View 1: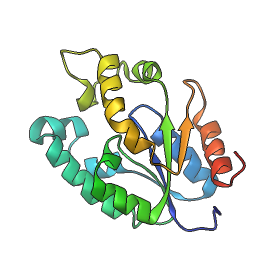
View 2: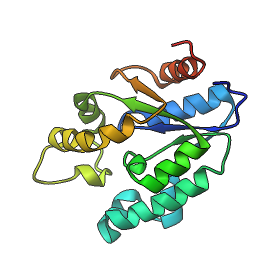
View 3: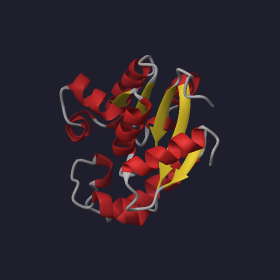
View 4: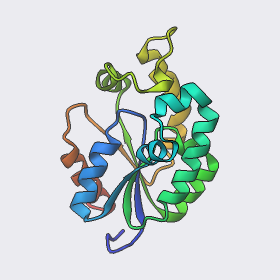
Length: 177
């Protein structure tokens, strides 16, 4: 693929895999706009994501997410970081596939736990009954088939800098492996 192509580049994967950090670096390297759909959701709802879940539930959140993804795909050409569950929705997936290239960032559950251990803003990981590792492993099992549909599936090491990962993505998309 050629970066003269004006299609979007979507970063997908589980929370804590670095989509936002990598996305900012990738957008800067490619001189593109960076969009984080979680930021668009917060802006649209005028509430933090954890509050949306607490007050209205996950179904309401997913409805807003669907709306902002429809909005984001029109921001061509952009680098767009998607929420961890966004690609599980068939309507979202159809809009994403029609407007861009998809790259999954994946890392081991233990790395995700380490990255998110002090983060209390993740409503899907705040169950009092299970520890975060069990919750992450459960959600990953559910979502991995969706993440594997990406054009590119990239394993991320725990300490790899975002700028380096962005460079890896550019090489992958250019076919340099």
